[in-house]
Length: 93
Image (tube, rainbow, N blue to C red; front, side, top):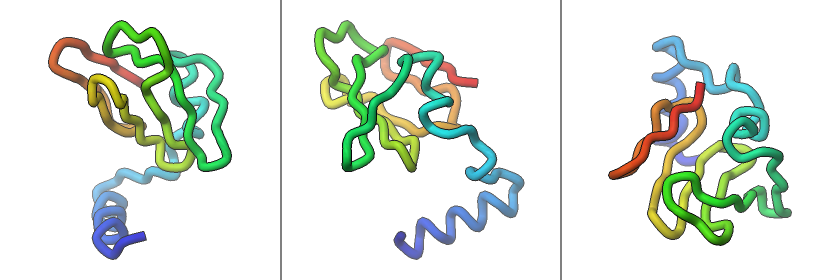
């Protein structure tokens, strides 16, 4: 973990946001993507909801909750809502 990341986390906790209180990543994304299967390096690949996707181009990290589509470049992380790209919105509650 980088020092800057640690400082940001401490500041967020002081403001009342504690990432540890979020549900597990798989539970958080289940309503949108269904059951996630993570590979050995901690990533799950799913079809992107931001564009018409014929194959799994969106990756979600098991620990961080971060996601990124390698086709349309949509990105974000769990706990931050809404997430949006140029033409679509995804709201996770």
